[in-house]
Length: 266
Image 1: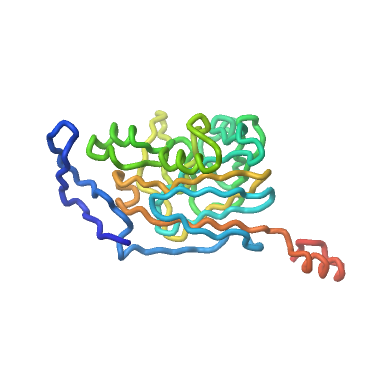
Image 2 (image 1 turned 90 degrees about the vertical axis):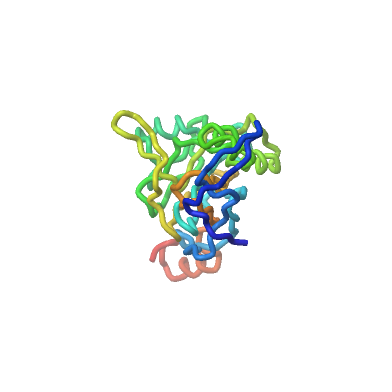
């Protein structure tokens, strides 16, 4: 169900100490009825093996098999898709921010970035990206950090950390398995003095990023429930998760061989 955004209308909230605090942050915001939504399509051609929508504020997970490509669609625009990656056969090996950034010598994630594990091995590769850069520095929001940043009146709101814990539990993982994450579609510029900021996004409805699995990878995503930062207009929207197998079907491969055409050639 959608509700209309409350914009800058002040909201008075009770505090645990019995006082009140006035905030312009909408409480319980869900994407507005007039939101522009674009479900997009896979960035890579192939046979669709999974097509799911992640509701606003919700977690998601799936195993993406080696060679398959996951396209994440920013359906409503500037909706952060917080993401963790694990070797599906050995979750002790998982995504590593420092290994990824050190190997490529750059703070941003772009087309061609190899997302590496804590063992330095490739987990996934960014094969297509419709925005200039993706973030892997800003971390994930949580109840504690939200309270610190925005005030005690938001302490009841769950964040990406809580989403990760809920989804990790379904996969036999726990608190010790949460590490620094990717933030697809979130804009965290690194200034000349090293300062960071979470600012207005560079995405838009229907923008996409595609990553290829270099081994069988367990992907966890939190469709960020953040309702206190104006970078997405206080308007959480859905994500679309599309996994395709880009390999030609068996019949197509046989036809290519029979015609003397190299497999995969145009």
